[in-house]
Amino acid sequence: MSDKPRVAFFDFSSCEGCQLQVINLEEALLDVLALVDIVEFREAMKESSEEYDIAIIEGSITRPMDVERIKKIRERASILIAMGACAYLGGIQRMGNKWTPEENKEEVYARHPGSETTKGDDNPFFEQPRHRAVDEIVKVDAVIPGCPIDSDEFAKVLVALLTGKKLPIPDYPVCVECKKNENICQFEIGGFCMGPVARAGCGAPCPTHGGECEACRGYVDHPHSQAHDEVLKKYGLTAEQIMNRKTMYTYRYIEEARGE
Figure: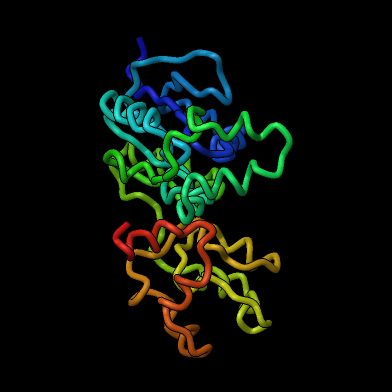
């Protein structure tokens, strides 16, 4: 019997892209396997186990059956990690919380032939209309942000947890990484960007390749004080204006501000 920590991966409401990023570690995955035994990982193996030390969760919690499942996983795990924007923030799907279940069903299914058999109230798919992050249901010991996660950051977080070191998750805005990459600010070319309040650590790939940061890694811990003051002042913006501008990944913060 190996004395290495046993790791199990579990997926809820998500595209499972973060788990694919773990597989994308390729040869570096061998270094991870030197430290742990993976006992359940549906994307990569058929075996499963109810005995594990570390549970790594991808996906938002949506249905009552998901709530019960994550609670059981938490009971068995010594360490539980929320991996990716869906588990950490509730994901893109959390925007569906803006509307009622009936409105969502009508928008998604009403225009399609045969939808009358899909929309029924007895369909278990519609048991629970609200998407929530994992830490809104159970205690989370560590978070790996992003959509998808960064493979190298995953490995660093896992090693930090196993060795008792500080988690390598930055708490400064993406603007810092944009400046390192010598990017032209999106505001300068007529765009809009969440960079001044978004958590860095990704290397700013979206602005670097002409896109806008959508804050898929969430906000820095204190956006009011740690947002890039120079950018905000230059363009006459406040942290609140930026945070309320886009909600693709960050609708959780709006719900929390409203007390929902």
